[in-house]
Every structure is written in C-alpha cells, then in structure tokens.
Length: 594
Image (cartoon, rainbow, N blue to C red; front, side, top):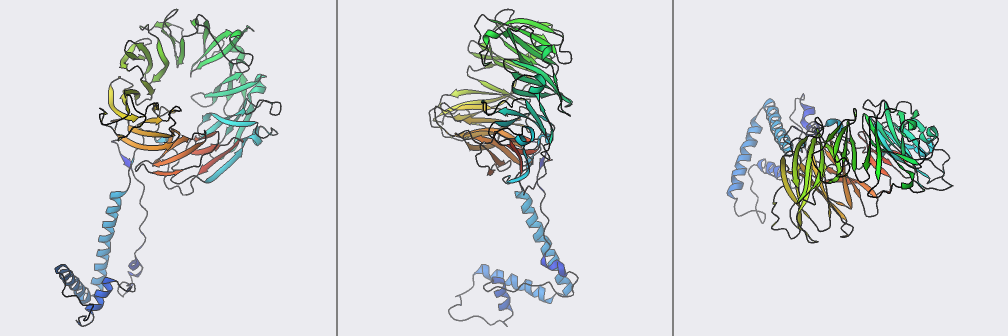
C-alpha cells in the first residue's frame, strides 16, 4: 500500500546513572574499572608520571593510528581535568544527549512499519505470542442440552450479532442413545462467554430439525432462519434479543403432500423457494435427483409479506437460478432462455447471451458476474444491477480459468505453462515468461470490478496436479487491500504443503509469502499480525501467525481436532467437539487492535 503507515510506540528510556546525582555538588559517579578495560588502563598510564612500560610487554613502537588516538584521548583528558565541576557536568550532559540521539535515530530507522488498514473495524486482537491463556470457558452442552450423553452433540457457529456468536447444536451420532439435538440455538457473548439465551427451533416447529442457518437483518434486531427438516427446508423468524422463534413454514411451504419445499435463496428483501415432487427425494430426505427433461416450480416471496408471490416460473431442472438482493438470475439455454427478474415486481428482462453458464453468478460491487462458454475459452460478463439485463463490461478468459470475486479485485488464475512434478524458481511480481522454470506456471490477473480493466498481471510457479485458489475466501471484503493466492497440495501428487503468496491489490507487488503444512486458508489480520488457518493431512487444524512487516513466523498452535477455530469479532475462540467453547489470548499482547 502507498498510504500512511503505523509503527508501535518505543518504550521509554530508563534514566541514566548520573541523572540521580544532578543536584549533587560532586562529579558524576564513575563505575569501578574492570581489569583489562582499555580506557581504565589508559587512564592509569596517564596518571603514572609518564613512566613507560619495559620488558617483554613493551611494543617495538606505537602505530600511527594508536599515536593519534593516544594524543586525542590525552588532550580530551587534560580538558576534563582542568575543567570546573560545572563545566564537567555540562560536558557529561551534552555527551549523553548526543549518544541518546544517535541510539534513538538508529532505533527509529530499523523499527517495523505496518500499512494502514483499509477497514480498521475488521482488525482483530494483536496476538504476538501464542494464545495460551483462557479468558473464559463455556460448556454449551451443559448449558443448553443438559443430560445429553457425552459425544452426542457438538456446536457450530451459524451466525453472529456484533461480537456475539449464534451457535447451533449438531447431532454427532444418529442413534437411540443420542436422540436428536438439532435445532437448538444459543447466543454467546463474545466478551464474557455468557449464554444470553437458548432456544429450540425443533420444539417451535414441532418437527425433526437437521440444521439451521441464521441470516440477521441489517439492523441485527431479528433474523431469518433457514431450517433443514426431514425432507426439504422451511423458514422461521428469530428475535435476536430474546431468542423467541416464530414459525413461518405455512407461508412458503406447498400444501400438496406429494411435494417437497426447499429454500433456494435468501436476500435482505426476498426469499426464493422451489416445490418439487417427493419422488425426487430418498426415504432419508436426500436429493433431489432429476432428469434432463424435468422442470421445477420456483416462487419469489417478499420477506416482509411472505403470503405474497411476486414471481412464479417453471424452469428446466438444469437451469442456474440465483437470487441477488432484488434481482433473480435464471440462466438456461432451454425454455424461456436466460433472463433477469425484478424480485419486487416480477418483471422479466432477457439476457442477450444464449451460451451455457459456467458456475454460479457472483456479485461484484454494482455488477453481477457470469462466466459463459465461448469457442476458445470463457467469456466473463458483468451485468449491471442498476439496469437489469444490461452488460456493463466483459472479458475473454482461458478455458481453465477460475476466479474469486472481491470488492477490490476480480482475481483470475489460469495455467500459462504445464508443469513437471518439480518446480523451482522465485515467487514474485515478475518473470512472467517462465523461460527459466522447469515446471508450470499460472497467471494471476486482477481485473477492476467496476470496469473489467486489468490492473496488473503476474505469474506463479505451480507443480503438476496442484490446486490454485485466489482471493480472501471466505471473506471477500477482507480487512486489507490484498489478494492471496494459495498453491495447495493435490491428493494425487501427495504434496503436503501450501505456498501462500499475497499481492497488494493496488499494483500487484508481493506483500507476503509463506509455506505452511497441508492446506491453508486466510483467517484474519490484526494491526501487526497475519493469521492463517492450516489443515494437516489428518484433517486437524491449527492457527499460524506471521509478522505483517517481516513475514517471519511468530507462533503456531498445536494441531487440534476442534470443530472450529476463528475470531468472534476481535477475539480468537476455539470450539471443541465436546461442546466446550474457549476464548484464548496472549498474556503478552503489546499492540492495540485499533
């Protein structure tokens, strides 16, 4: 980054020995001389009436440099001897001030500087040492599901309100011993670990619940629950202050007992549901299984008026149907073709492209990005959200290109040179031709989300069969202006390390590199520390911390079988398989989060 930078405050300088005697009438205190001290020996020779040493210890003659040094030192000592006590004190004060200025200047020159964050509110605690201190510990199994046999229930974070977490109970074992504990929600205070409320969605709905996801409203006063039930899914509402659950299944579910309703999409204003024949689902609720000529009935409902259907359509089962805020994208070459639907009015706008879509649409600022098939690769098209169906910009991509979208970069990675199993060579923002690389390379290009123009392009070495991922998943709006590219191991190749390269989103220069065991994903950033989440070959996870300035590793936790390690707001929290949640901290933390 080219913006302002921040550096930690220097510790105060301890008082010098003479400062305690400034008011004394005597000279500054002098420490006793140590044997062999050259200064002490010189002083002794100066006070010995010029008697010169003789015998074996005497040199044949002084060197010119030593003669000049001796003369200069002698002159300074004579000035000191003849000076008054007041002048001696002044000379001492001046000398100490000069040395202090030199030391302070040298210290400032080597002090690390850290880029000013793009989003200070997203910074987490600055843990410069391994977080071994437990700030609080809460046993959620004992708090919310007392009496449940050990090993039957674990908890996952399914939502958040500020620094608090919404935890959902999960059934670890389907058996008579464990019964069913799915559907239990708990709000936990991120600062204290206190349980604010505990509620049972399954009891409110009167149905077996597999899992629950939570989507808070913008004002964080209530949330919409997507509830996975015995077959399909349904809706409920949750009061985030009290934990009260309100059943909304009747407003969205089909009244036909031979149909299964599924929640297919949820935005801040609408919900997309599908109604499908029960024959597409297995006896245990798995599915659906569809044929090429099958069609599915979709409906759009406004969240503030779920009894109203704003749009209804029968679409081919192979169509891609995605909800973005107030727009529904239906991408298909069959039936009515691809189109964009206004979720509030149901108005349809045709999309002027008849090719098959690759993957799912993704939101990028004021655009929705869709990759379509092309004769020689892919065509990336950015549709305007202000003008439904209109194309804002487009770009041609390689056939194997993949992309990760954030509000800073549409990061495109593509193979430029097929590789051998062994790759050597530097990692940097250059050497794009790869002529000296015996292995493969992938290009990394940052496209502007607003215009599609290439801001910068570079390349990285990659071994044959390795997986390349880019962006700051799972948080596209990361706390800083950087793009991370991870070259991860392939199960076929057997490599057990991940190479992480972080580029500045503005100009593409390499800001950070690291090699981590197993698979790795970015976790968070503090003022001076970058955190990565690493997974070893056994599936156990650990947190690795690096200094953001020097890139050196500061610490790493031991691999753990915890079901989740992550930051609740600014704090690092570990959730164990036994339902115990712990906030951990570094007792030696030195830098403030903000």
